[in-house]
Amino acid sequence: MRRTTVSVTGATVSLQEWTPDGGGASGVGLPTVLLLHGGGADSAELSWGEVGPALADSGLRVFAPDHPGFGRSPRAEWRLTQPHLVRYVGELVDALDLDDYVICGLSLGGGLTLGHLLDRPDRARGAMLLGCFGIMPRLSDGLFGRPSHAATFLLLRSGLVSAMTRSYSRNPAAMERGLRAIVRNPDARTPNLVQAVIAEAAASDGLEVFGEWQREQVLWNRLRTDYADRLPGIPTPTLVIHGDHDRGVPIARARTAARLLPQAELLEVPDAGHWVQRDRPDLVIPAMVGFLRRVG
Image (cartoon, rainbow, N blue to C red; front, side):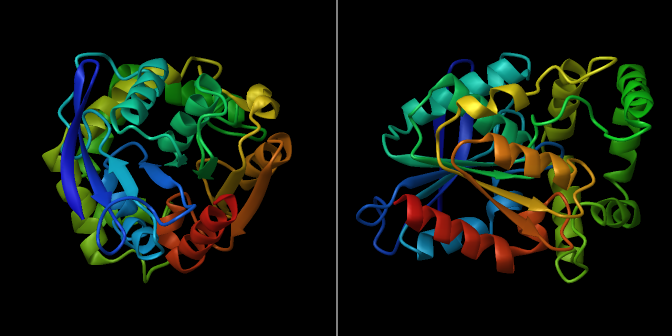
């Protein structure tokens, strides 16, 4: 693994790169993989530190950026909005000179993946969506979905969400309880992971810039970004990977997205939460490798 930096409009992006033995490009016929992490106290290392080496061991070249303001990337000159982040992903693809690639995103990164596929049709050879954002109209479904969404809107505007997040991000016991919702497997939810997330929250501006993005996205009655109606227009072969106990994006939404995407397959990961590749790497990584070989 090596770390490098790339410049895009108004931002310097730090990214990790994993290469097959001997370095260089992916194996013959195999695409390069671009991995996009999620929001909150996340980074390329936290989300993809196990996935990247495994894909490289399978003969693939892999890039994983820290989005501006996350990980080791300094904040951008621009506000973190969905259109700005989608533009950044496109510029990153250009800066890395990726002609033959598969793009993959977790949560926020999944929404950026969908935005990129819509912004640049037919560029990526394939896509992978993990716990994907951007496929539902509000933060919550069900009978209490609308009032719950409106309450979150008010909490975000009041600053209480940011204050609560900062508080538990400094408390190992509170962080461990919070991680239970997104990493259900206790063997995966290790003390090392808890400490790594706490360290990430302290070392970067990730929580602050993610809050900026949340305030732009969460309107009083809906999410600003919902790609669901546009999914039938994405012809890119896509693997949808989703935990069947994902509290952030219900599995029913992933099933609908997989039906709407013209060339999609769905992997429902049993007893897994939102951080699905952290929860069940034993299922997720082989599925990713298999998909990449099929599209290759």
